Picture 1 (cartoon, helix red, strand yellow):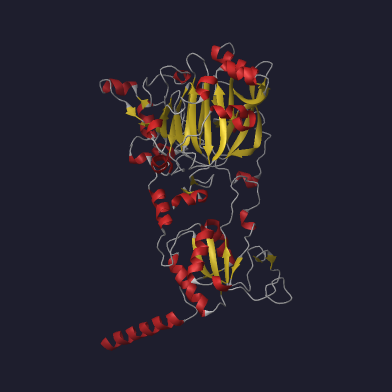
Picture 2: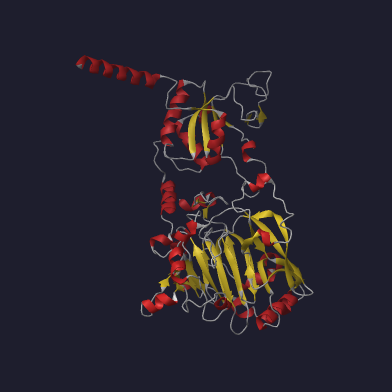
Length: 569
């Protein structure tokens, strides 16, 4: 028995030694083109040709260890001599289409077979469901040769191409540790609040976020709460002796004079944490200048594009069957298969080009209720493009302008009785309130299956100016990528059960305040007018997001935007 054990151990030792010296090291897997298709959907690939020298293979074994903990980087072998993508497409190396399977003087791939090739992650177009399948857009292979074929330069190459921060021994560079720390320490509502939407609906039955003054007080069949950010059930109030409130977590509030660039960057931008900045805009010239009269005088004759809805409800989701052309409208089968909610549509407001003075008249009449069933909104209106003279009246905040890159600067003006339905924006947002107030219900973007992120078909309202009526006239062959199908006031929790576990955050922006709302945070916005001026006026700064994700993609995770990698050092 002892002899058998000894012999067995000897065999193991011999096998181990043979494995170490064998060029066909079993740990360096050979990938076929079909496997590469799937790998490149999620990351990048560095491959060594099957016929490469033992020296290069040894380098790749070290690379395999260096990137062992990077799930978006794959290291392995590949047979370049007989490479062909599924479907018959030939490999393209440095822009040359290898039409022949063999690298000979008679083929398009003249010269020796390369030893090392790199494939970048496939770029997926998630915006259009009719676009060609991304799997047919085969990536080119970059050739790495010469003095670059050593461990140090290959690790550096992969780090640069795959957006990683690995050392040759598999550790993380300081910037990599910083990046990992950021991703691991984002602000989660669930860490500070245990109030879920299921608890709110069970307690109150109807979501009511109304101020004591404001049109939302009439949306519910019964008033459940006179207190901001709370839910109460009348029966629970009686049973608990006047209690029964469930407090929704409130946004943190800071003062604009008490925050510096580094503190704001580390505590809010890096953590993806919403925060209200008190008195942020009270020193802007716009705070005093942008009266209704001033805007009328300066831009009254300018043509602007405004949005119109009945009742102030902007971009909600409803059943497609309510629309006039529902029976005639046909969605292609290829698109239908990719739609998670083909029976729903995002209702886009009607559009109207009018003089700015006519728009101001319209919101004044709506505020005075001399016209009914029409709510007008100047939204997403680029100040740079349409009102560049106003740029000198507003200022970027000192604590952010040297950190983030500004992409858009917009004006938002309405009669103040509006709801912007549940959606996200792919920008870091500073929403600055000049007149009126806004209340927002927010949900974090770190588990988007709860908000049912996905493509939703669109439809646009038709407005008849002569009789001020709206029609559900036309379904469209386009989709929204940023709207949630959930109606906060009438949620279908049987169809969308994951929403029960979502934990809300509420933020109220008063006049003079600004809200930092990080990119991809879901939010529904309730606007209220200034009591005297009967309007709601805001400006927002949209910045290149510090944390980024692909969308629509519920399973895709947030990560540091490569655009800001310089801030990791």
